Image (cartoon, rainbow, N blue to C red; front, side):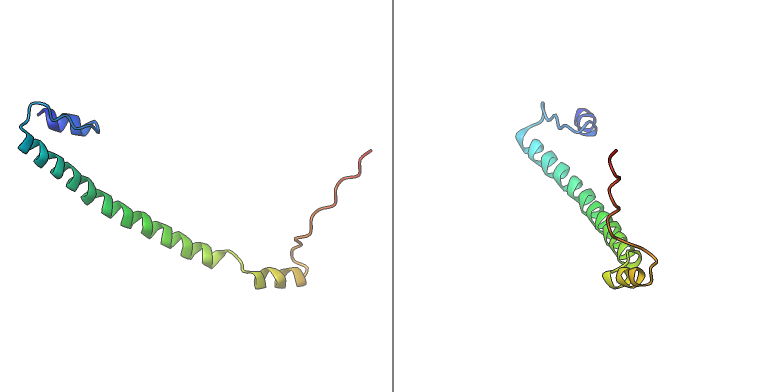
Length: 85
């Protein structure tokens, strides 16, 4: 009915319900939200952890960068500024 339609729009219109029923609906609404929110947090945290592991694996560390610089493979020195005419 009216409560389901209002909840689907992100609001909660409890007009016309007794105070006892309003309390029960509010509690059920909050519980349902949290039951969906917790798995979303776990999923988001898992994605973040996997991304951190991948980044840690593929972003070179200082020793790798120093070895590449020593071998002349890369240079992290700033480029010379162009001469102004």
